[in-house]
Amino acid sequence: MLKKILLAVLVAAPLFVQAQTVKFGALNPQEILNVMPEMTTANNTLSQLQEKYVAQAKTLEDEIQKKEVEYQELVKNKAAQATLDAKQKEYEDLLGRYQTFRQTAQQDMQRQQETLFAPIQQKLMNAIQAVGAEGHYAGILDSSSLLYRGDNIEDISAKVKAKLGIK
Image 1 (tube, rainbow, N blue to C red):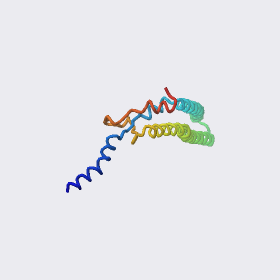
Image 2: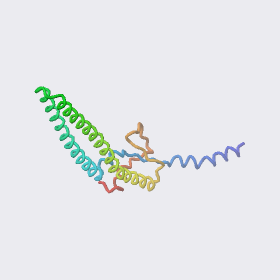
Image 3: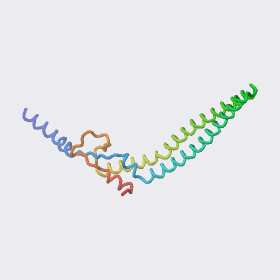
Image 4: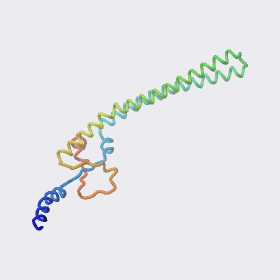
């Protein structure tokens, strides 16, 4: 019986020692993304694209408003029904073009955002993984969602920033 207890203690001892040396890292990836120079460039590119689409949308909106005023003038002057129908069709076609444009622009903005941000996020993940491997961390957690932070969790934000070349 004593041999079994001694054997169990000897087998379990390395597990207790190992459990005490486990360390975790934590960082807020969004904070690091926000200070990466690549994010500024990507955000500027998206802003320029958005400005372009807003200008194009404004042109179409002005044209729609002009068609609406023209139609109202024709109604006011009691134009022929064929003329009214033609203007109504022009207005509806333009409105359809506008809606299609807005949908296409929104999809393109989303696609551009994914294209621009994916390599930046991958670069951050590579840096996090490298710091994790170098520091022999059991895991790295997102500190923005931690409800409690114990002594075994080290803030590795500075190490990841250094790996990325950010001061």
